[in-house]
Image 1 (spheres, rainbow, N blue to C red):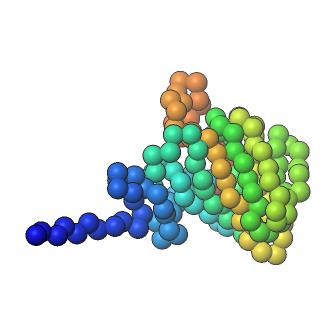
Image 2 (cartoon, rainbow, N blue to C red):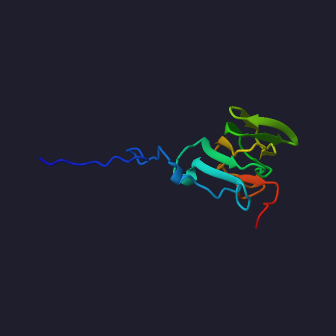
Length: 154
């Protein structure tokens, strides 16, 4: 009698699809954080980190006190849930206060950015539509994000 051993993955199902991601595997280097002090944009559920999601992505944005994300827009809806911290979201030039437990809807192609005004890091769970649909020639950049202000660092 022959026994076979099947190794159980802790991150992928039997079909090879990724199911779980741990912090050590979160993606970084998103246009939101490049050249910008005090802003971290972690990719959790994204094609770039091995998920084959077809309609949604999940990220974690952290903004340190006194910093803000760049003014930007994108070709999908996006929802923020404030895990902790306080600040405000600017949409089309209007400011809306944020605090732990609040949620925000950023509509398609609406200019927006987030400011951290508290004493602790503002942490946002970010859920958005997959932005990897064919963007050109109708989208103005090769990236799904259109960053509308220069980075503050070289």
